[in-house]
Structure formats: C-alpha cells, structure tokens
Image (cartoon, rainbow, N blue to C red; front, top):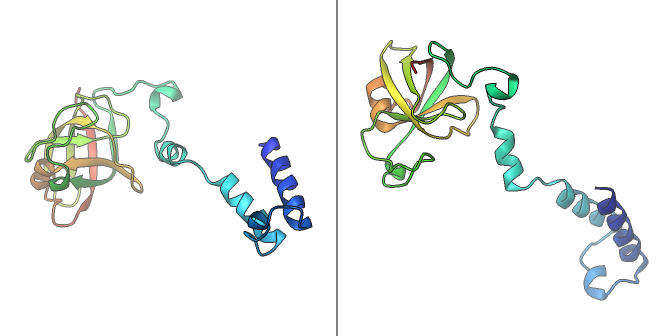
Length: 166
C-alpha cells in the first residue's frame, strides 16, 4: 500500500510539472483529478473481495459446530428456479425443476432443514445442495419446488424459520 502511495505521488508530480508525455499530461484536467483517479483505482476492491465480504464467518470459525440437529435460525428466504435449470449447483448436481433443495451460505451439502413460512405456517424439508443467497440479509434460497410448497413464489421472499434436522 505504501509503495502505491509513493508511486501515485510521483505520478502526480510528473503530471503536474508538464514533464510527462502529452498523452499522460492530457489525461487529467488537473492534479486533483489525477489524485481522485489514483485513489479510486487504489481503493476499489476486486470482485473476489466484494464476494467474500458478503459471506459471514462460519460458526466453526467462532468455535461452534457447523450444524447440529435442532439448531434454529430465522430470517428472510427467497427462491430461484427457471433461469438456472440444467446448471450445476455448488455441490455438483444438476439443478432440476420441482426439487426440494436449497442454497445456504455455510450449512454442509446434504444437510436436511425444515423450513417454515412464518406468514402462512406451511413447512417443508429441503436438502442443502448449493451456496447462497448473496443478496441482502437473506438466509436461504429455495428451489422452485420448495418455494411452491411454502407459498413463496408469488411474493418472492418470506420470513422463515429454519430447523436443522441432520
């Protein structure tokens, strides 16, 4: 980081002094524009950094078990479906219509979870086979089959309770 700051300072001195080539000198209207451009490019996180920031630390990192039977979580669920049919999930299986599967950020693949829609009381058991959701504060992404059983397809999202079964 320090070397980038020194490099940026040197570039500003050269650009501001007029000693730079005409192409470099003409690329910024003032030294302050050059400082902003250097600061923005230096501070912009890579795609990987943005992606990793969205994934919360796993309970294992906090000294807890990854998942234990009876563990309960509450939050918002969303669903995904038609645009992903035929693609491979993070676990490697092909995503098929009507499945009772789901995506969770850190529960192990194959974990069975009872999902209960808190608005209408409907529940179903899903198997974790994918990673996600990576949007907002959602805790689970349901496959279309599970979302249909829970009555989530029309609203898109719902408040749910998750209970780890195994």
